Length: 477
Image (cartoon, rainbow, N blue to C red; front, side):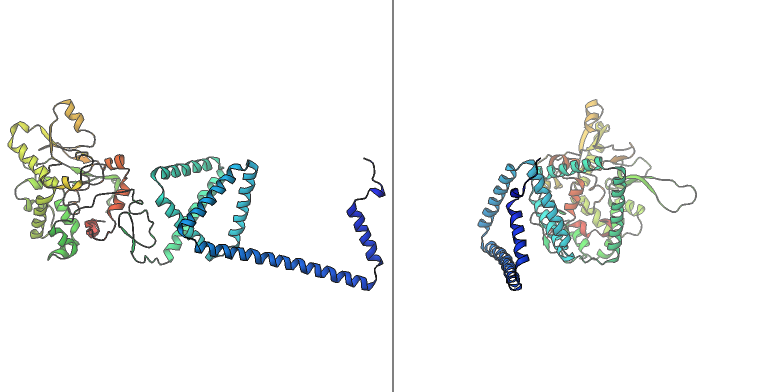
């Protein structure tokens, strides 16, 4: 490339050279005048920056005043316009512009997080939590499932891409966080505050720090309101009965004397002398025949259907008030649907010799779907006693799986599935005196109510509703 000659110098280069010559030949007065002019020029430029900052601050204040003065309709209209404008801009941008925008957002967010103090950080986190809770409560079931699935997919991708070192580092960090959190909670007192927050969907009262979804999952879990217990039992639970003190102290013993099932579990045997009672595996409920074999003493549900009922109960459970126990068993005979239905079935089997091969079936799905719970909780409705002859193959197929099939005598013990609707009412007769259905698999299949959601709904405090569970003391535990 040929060299440029002297005449081919750029205009800026020649201007700089001329300025240098002028400064070399200027007098001291001329130099002082030039320096003063440059100082005034810099001052004017600085004044322009201040005016710019003042203008921006004035715009911010004017915008804030406009936002405060606008109504809800105007606010929604402005937000909708902003969303549409943002959506249009996002659709028009290319991939390079999108990546540049995301990177600028990340940098700006990182700078903002670095500059914020501890108080600002806590305020931001609290605001984010409230906004997340409001968003979760408002989302529909399809959106909720889609969000959970997207989170699972992101977590799977992240876990699949991480190296062994990253995995170990993540597990170690999680363990450290849990340990630090437990130590922090152990050394700091926790104040629950007042239970004055009410759910708008199910009317449950919540503590200050309890999440809004703890009771009914923002209206997704809906169960029928249960009846108040019989008057005698209600007065015993609330301390208004003469025997309330003894009853509440020994409520587990009274329930154990009246329940219709036994507690089943697998015990782990230890070599040598060991005073501990160690259970292995899952605990379950068992139920036997409706009447004892000749020569055997009546146990559990059999006691309801034999003579000298009170004496049999006192024989198996010591330290109970016989007057109170007689009063409680009279209440169950009067209002418990399982006691009434099974007693009717026992009387029928006893009176008809042709029904000796029949069985009593407690069907897990006996109640028609869509029917109101109170109709089938009436003592006159025999919802549990279904007589069937299992001598044919169709009867066996019909009564197997989760159905509870009882013989009049013999047959040993049968386990009741935890997904059976009678699992709770047959065991906790003092908490469910009418024989109300417990959780069953149909609730999950038909309405998406899991066992955890079911019991989380039941144990809440609701104004104007009496909850026997919360008065059950040790029996509730």
